Amino acid sequence: MIPMLDLKREYGYLKDRIDAALERVLTHQCWIMGPEVKELETRIAEFIGTEHAIGVASGTDALVLALRALALKRKRAEHWSPEDEIITTPFTFTATGDSILRAGATPVFVDIDPETFNIDPALVRAAVNEHTVGVIPVHLYGQACRMDEICLLARQHRLFVVEDVAQAFGASYEGVKCGAWGDAGAFSFFPSKNLGSFGDGGVVTTHDAELAALVEQLRKHGGKDKYNVEVLGYNSRLDTLQAAIVLAKLDCIDEFNKRRQQIAGQYSRELSGLVKVPASPQDGNHVFHQYTVRVRRENGLGRDAVAGRLKQEGVSSMVYYPVPLHRMKVFRDRQLVAGRLEESERATAEVLSLPIGPTLTDVEVGRVVAAVRSAASEVRSQTSEIGYQRPEHAD
Ligand SMILES: *Cc1c(COP(=O)(O)O)cnc(C)c1O
Image (cartoon, rainbow, N blue to C red; front, side):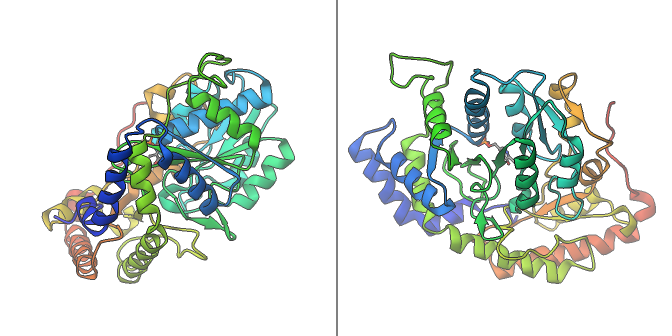
């Protein structure tokens, strides 16, 4: 079976570096905020092009701490309040939306651009009102949002921008890295991300010294030091062992992202007549954390039937994401929805992500292509039986 991402093979490739990095930590035994944490923060700030980077316990915490630091900075309040609206996309991982709730604000979901699956800046503009405090663009699947438009709009309305960069380490827009455009960038080192650790971890990037100091304070219980606690914080430090692993992988991130882009190019050339392939990226604005196609109803193909056939052929595939956030119970009664979110709904019914990763071989890419080709023709010939069903949603 070709997995979505072969972490065992990646470890094999990096084994010497990672083992040496781990051994250094085992020897110095500085488990909590050891030297690797500071070193990684320095290297990431340099790589992304921000003044500051603050390691935290997860990508979710990176979002929550960035949002709470912004409440402290802009409102002198520990949390946002439910009247405060933060605009984001419903076509993302849950954490994007639940971090808004945990920071005390109300998420406002606006629809996506069907070409990129990313939030549509024109719809963000239409949703802004006097309650809006900020925007969270998500660089979904590794593709940068239209950050020039989003940041211009934010400046005009004095909104903050927190970028959700969990899936896009190393992606850039107009030559500026994702995570360096907004007031803050929130990154995740969850193992399956394109820069992953061997557990949970994350980082917040920012140009703003005040915000950086607040995030640092929040990650260690809310005090400037241990016994002068000023605000309600967290225990959300980046683990030293995870920092050591990410440091070892960071040396390869450009090489790994290039290989992902190369594989994506191969897929798109081979699959473009069969399924809807991603819009061709320019200037490194897509690092292909996921390679995601649409299986459209008009093609006579059912997405789930194609996924089933791929499995029979030994090829993994995944649906990111089958349920949009505005359909989830957790957001019910505490969300606002701008418009009908039709493109987000359609995307949940049509998307299918294929295996991609830095160690996937050309031969494996060929096997995936052949499997999609055979699934497409098979499903097409059985269309009348399989049909196309929209997922049932309880309203
Ligand atoms: C993974 C992910 C997160 C959360 O990161 P964790 O490290 O798992 O907490 C947030 N947003 C998006 C878009 C993600 O893909």
